Image 1 (cartoon, rainbow, N blue to C red):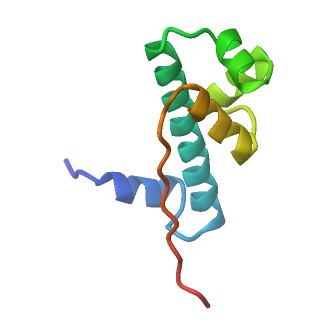
Image 2 (tube, rainbow, N blue to C red; image 1 turned 90 degrees about the horizontal axis):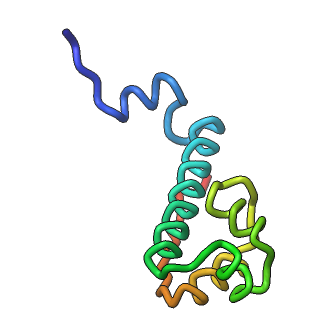
Image 3 (tube, one colour; image 1 turned 180 degrees about the horizontal axis):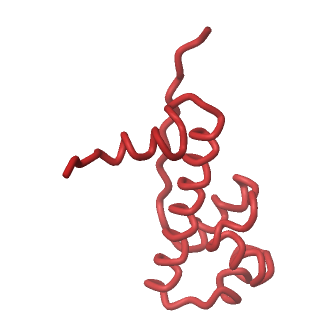
Length: 99
């Protein structure tokens, strides 16, 4: 039985790095991880979606959409969410090869 790496399987079924399908897949994955992180921190802080929404200044539905990656929330809103959760945010910017 031949085994395949995750990278090989992803290349085959999603597309190689740099393709539109792969970029879209990776962006969705990042948004999903962001939503899961927000949800986990909210639960760790014993807050409901409604309570977090009140702290941020948005409705419960918006928090639900962010946690479930159902919306492209504004960066400003995401920062407000982490601020309300008393969580420090770090992110990296990596310049890609220019053509």
